[in-house]
Length: 255
Ligand SMILES: [Mg+2]
Image 1 (cartoon, rainbow, N blue to C red):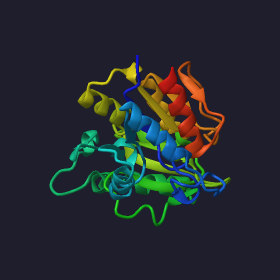
Image 2 (image 1 turned 90 degrees about the vertical axis):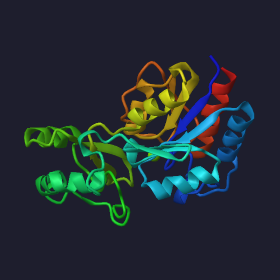
Image 3 (image 1 turned 45 degrees about the vertical axis):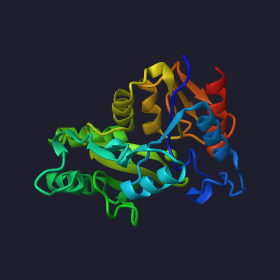
Image 4 (image 1 turned 90 degrees about the horizontal axis):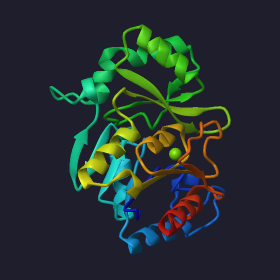
């Protein structure tokens, strides 16, 4: 079945060093991410950015590449043709409060920071102005953290590993348990009437890899987290970042 949609992560996937569309992971100038987008445009394939960034930080790059749908804050929010929807379960916006505020009021972020004793901290300045997830950095055992949250009555939220910042630290999101990139992709597929076989996803993190469960094929770029468990519909590109995106798109369009 022909591909109709490509879901792509931004940081570490479509974008290179310094979150640039026109630089590779080493900071060299490249047009390959653009060529991948061009191949999609020519084939009439929709491109949907899926990101952990807050809304404004995804809306602008989405506009820059001509995408009319995107998900932000790891899928807690989804915008399709200007219409927003929230996938936040018990933390849906209410009484003028955002999902972020409702998670804050639940006490889960304070509990987690306290229990981790300095191993993680707010990911300043990226933790400001957010609507859904509390973004953290450091190094922590995600399964143990989620077990602790569930044990203390905070099963409505989960800690998500959104990939490495550097050799010593990863970026984490404390998010409503219903919010995920996979859930946002599934919602977008329903909105557009896409079948799994008509969709691929490209990413570099564990959270991105979960999208493989709802699309036909998942491509992990060469710089992806090497600890991601593989599944039969996973493919690994030889190239990193935007060049890996290009490789994935070309292979999928020719298949
Ligand atoms: Mg990424």
